[in-house]
Length: 401
Image (cartoon, rainbow, N blue to C red; front, side, top):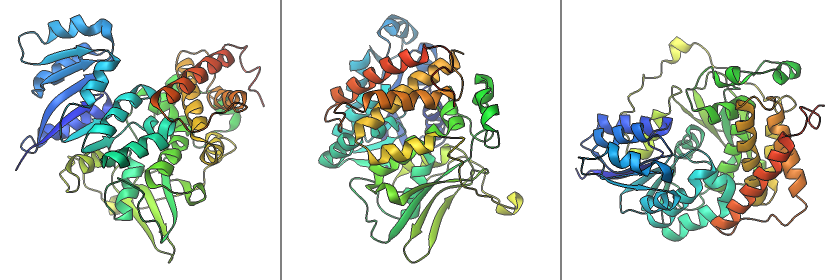
């Protein structure tokens, strides 16, 4: 068997390390070309040595010398900087795993989509901030795109079609549904939500994730972003996209067909399941997770999300109908607001309020759909600037209600 050569963008994050765990378990199927990280020199060097990488890149140029020293004596080339990340994404490999969190992952993911035969996409911001551009480049390059988010991986499987390289046939589909655990605050009142602390918001009841994604899960902003992601991945209109709260997180996505049938994908809540599918696509491999025991679970429950207490979902509906630039604005504002919340500068419910206010302040201009990476990054920068101004105002003066 010919081994599949991989580049992993964001190797030290939760998706990156889970990917490497799977690669180690089936080393006869995979080999590592390049690993990247943001600033974690020690972690990147350790992974590069362990997995016999050929090349290692750190995004922060100030960390170059430290990475060079950490890998001295090993036959691993080293580079640093944002441009080096994009160059790493274009090195000839069989698959790039795009797992950098946030808009920082857009440029290298886009570079991979334009040059590589296969991309396993775990960076939702690539589609949220530049969905039309990204999918256009995927189509023009005939890139095989396999989503790594558990919900979109579930929809891909339930649709029973090929990996995404163009719009799938949705003729007989009435609705695509992604599920949400509801996060740690599913049952809290509006008043209780306003008093949530960063420590509480980081404690997700089901999934183990990084801090930014954990906060997005708590506010349900992750579901807002995932709806936008689904719009571009599957080329579907917003009226046929929905969210269902499912606290056990066993069903990850459902496809409703016009004949009344519903096909759901089920698995224990572990990111290794969708990662394994992407790595082995179009085949499957052992995901190194416990098998699903429905009898032990006993029951699965579902409920409609409360859009009043979790306004991110209402905002998502607005974005699904708007130009792509609006999504880029909200994503930038959300990243800024999450950082400020984690620093204790704003309250939990201020996060989405700042996103809404930022969009309102910029919606009068010609946002449109970003036609280039520069377009998307300019919208992101302006959104962060405006959101920063809003976040600096006296606590809750603009957001109480």
